[in-house]
Image (cartoon, rainbow over all chains, first blue to last red; front, side, top):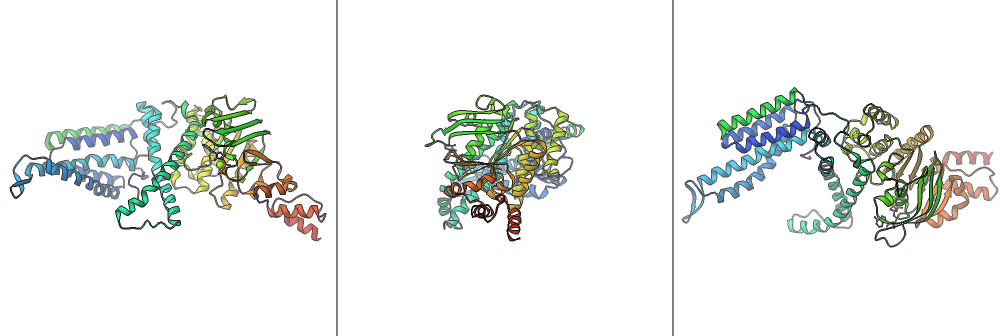
Length: 254
Length: 279
Ligand SMILES: Nc1ncnc2c1ncn2[C@@H]1O[C@H](COP(=O)(O)OP(=O)(O)OP(=O)(O)O)[C@@H](O)[C@H]1O
Ligand SMILES: [Mg+2]
């Protein structure tokens, strides 16, 4: 399963203006960043999963949390050994391995990373990239060129993946065995495929650019978009709720 | 009318000419099929018609291509798209959106087509291609044939006078390939759109096109109606292009004076011919 795919639906959050969705994800991230309490941070993660459930993407949220957990773990380890204040907690032969302060800030940082990233990643599940792009251009007058580059990059991920599999299959047909357990051997086998992948990818990007240009890409301005992306009461409510969330975490969770 | 005079093109860094001394006139409302071996210059030729060559791809360009008197080398290619629409060989990369409707909207929005007109045109092209039910679908999940129809619809929405398609059936099964040709035939007949299509399956060309062009090493090796093929069977054989067996059969029956009708291009016609001979 692709964890960044759009999941169709018509929940409250699905129907928000794409700009609001993006803003809301950022505000939620800000709440996670100012939050200084381990339990409140866990609360923010759980709350996010519950919110996801209202749009039918709870499973996706849980999978993403699990994946982000590994990222959190790396942050945790680094932070654990670098922050040295508080009481020594683990001592080996007179050498202080880590301290209470280290443990606390490591735990907090890793949870914060998860809580802040989760809403941003879930944004893609309830927003069509095209809508986000067009709404940013229409409402915020972001130059279309940049919005287009970002959406195209996202669109090309699965195309490149297919391309990679095709090239791999071609190699398999020539007797190359990719099913090795040895990671170094695997890297040795996959690395040479990067060149043909790069070449064919560049060709594809070229065709894409040409196709866009031949359909008047250059003529496009922020007024060009056909679909309107009006803001509604829904959007106002969402932003108000998130501002309140930030206020609450700032007051009690810091 | 499309007029091609002494067209030649050498890609930047290319060793030999991709196109060399092409002369041809294509009338409004024609349906031209282009075939030829890989590397013969088919794609390059379609690019020259839409102005991509020499405007977007650099190289040495010779001669002139004009569409209704407008020079494709000079007139801005992006505006030209409203006259000559190009469907590219690589079906996935030419898409610019992830949802069918957005793909069709793209050109209409860019060219500043009025709001009410956009809605009408989207409805119309979806209907013309029989893909109304795909409107809100993600392009990634569509079949090859469906994707191809979306690509054609997004060009057709711009209401070009000429539509140029580069191997649109290359990755399709026989059934969907035929369907694409049927759609193009309808567009050609009912709307008078000039269709220029690159196609490897010669049977399909014989059945649907009005004129056929065979390219070889950047030159025109054959140009005529599918019926004219019969007199050039040797040319085709030399180029490694298989003439439909029914055509070959009827041509030899005619030259042996066993049959005095026209050459047959389809199995149906051949069946009629055989029945007549046997009578
Ligand atoms: N971007 C390029 N740079 C240099 N040479 C090129 C480029 N594109 C094509 N050529 C060369 O120009 C010649 C004609 O290519 P073209 O793509 O027009 O052939 P084609 O008939 O469309 O082939 P195919 O059936 O494989 O699509 C070939 O020899 C090819 O190698
Ligand atoms: Mg080609």
